[in-house]
Image (cartoon, rainbow, N blue to C red; front, side, top):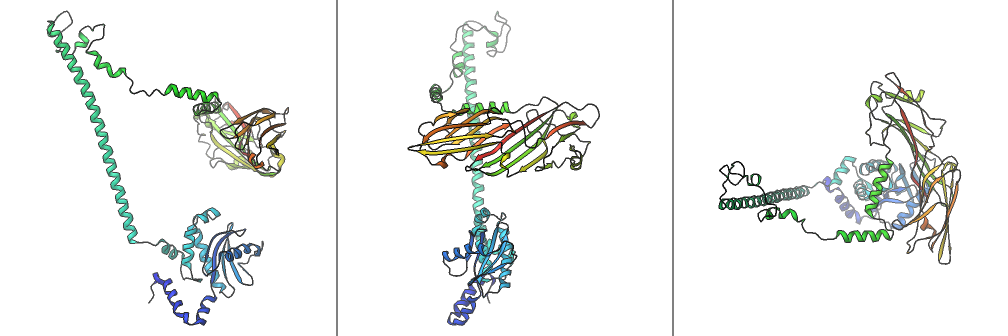
Amino acid sequence: MVFACHRKLAIIVELFVTATHPFCLWAIFKMVVLAASIITKTGKALVSRQFVDMTRIRVEGLLSAFPKLVGIEKQHTYVETENVRYVYQPIESLYLLLVTNKQSNILEDLETLRLLSKLVPEYSPSLDEEGICKMAFELIFAFDEVICLGHKENLTVPLVTKYCEMESHEEKLHLLVRQSKINDTKDKMKQKASEIDKSKIEKSRGDKGGLTSLNSSGLGRLDNGFSKMGISGGGGGGFGSGSIHGLDVDLEYPKPKGPSSVDAPAHAPAKGLGMQLGKTQKTNRFLESLRAEGEVILEDVSANTSLSKVSAAVVPTDPVTLCIEEKINVTLKRDGGLSNFEVQGTLSLQILNRDDGFIQVQIDTGDNAGLQFKTHPNINRELFSNQNILGLKDPSRPFPTSQTGDAAGVGLLKWRMQSTNESLVPLSINCWPSVSGGETYVSIEYEASSQFDLHNVLILIPLPALRDPPNVRQVDGEGSYDPRRSCLVWSILLIDSSNRNGSMEFVVRAADSSAFFPINVEFTSARTFAEVTVVQIIALKGGAPPKHSSRVQLLTDNYQVV
């Protein structure tokens, strides 16, 4: 009798026994699965498990030839060649593929493929190249459970997962022992920490006790001195009313003008500031020398960043503020052409007082056929579709209020636009590096669209490793070298109708043209692509609507020339 846990061993033993019968051995290996693989649309093998003796070159040749055999509009699940048969199933952007003999049972191969197609999502939730490669070994173990020596096992998905788990009592025991050791170590660590805290508390109490004894001994010596002088605290002498002997000396008796020997020890610890290493002055001199050389100090950068954030966060002053913001993602090719163009916009609402939240906002979306608008789930979509009015589904509820420093507000509407029209690009960049002798001459120019006025334009050109700053020969605007990021920063404060075109030329040591890419671009504009405008604010409780203001801004999210 053969047990289930030793089924593979039994098959191997049977094959060994039948080795003396060539006909039986040939019959067993005649109808087999040669390989089970997961490949890309281009034929790149991500996971491949061979069940017969095959060389790597042979396997890669079979897998790379498969995409050429599959038609675009064909709905077949298999393809045959002179030697092998491909049984396949598309999985999103990948192929699950079985390479078999032409003599194999195709119905059994289809059943094997169906079982493997259920196992792949079980072990790899993300069916892409990265997810498959990450779970490659788990998939290979699962393939081994399903197919043994080229033949399908009579298994189900739960059985395969159970066999692959390889649950072991010894492993569980080992994990329990290890976890108990970890818990014991944590308990000892907590106990040691509490002992250290207790010792610190006792030490601080001891220091306070020493100070108390010092004060009491000083007061005792002072009382003894007064007693020797014939002054008693119990009688009603000229130094004030009587008190408990020795306790009210500092309050009742006049203090001497000069420093006394009793007061000096009590106040001695307050005079010193502890050990001083004296590095502050040297550190300041070192930082000043770095600033003089043009280096950027982290303290200055953090201070400037905090100031810029404070200045950038505009605090709303009106009761209602509507912010229209678009972010643009553009990828331009260095040889010309547009690789990616995407615009994402949002309309957000800021309300300072709760009483001003009972409103509706009517907007004008203009003639934007290429835009896709999407409202917040709490916004009445039917009202927006028919009348372009943004209001809550429940008119009895107000819009939520925003904090004074909250610049984001509450999002009401989003829109998105994608295009391949290069004329929509606000700013085009052309870079022409040319090597002459031992130097590289770089000419870079920009061309801005007439639809937008661009503010605070920054064009960051990466540079190769340089010993000296680049030699900027001509620039429209300002050019500065950033040694930290190893790039040349071309800044233009404003691009409008007076300077739609501009150029810059600089020279560096000889380098490859790819060293000057990708070029990153940053800018802002007061005009957007969607041109969404606020028509009016409608008060739901009657009366005059609250005063409102609008802010419109176009920002760059990822703008590159690659």
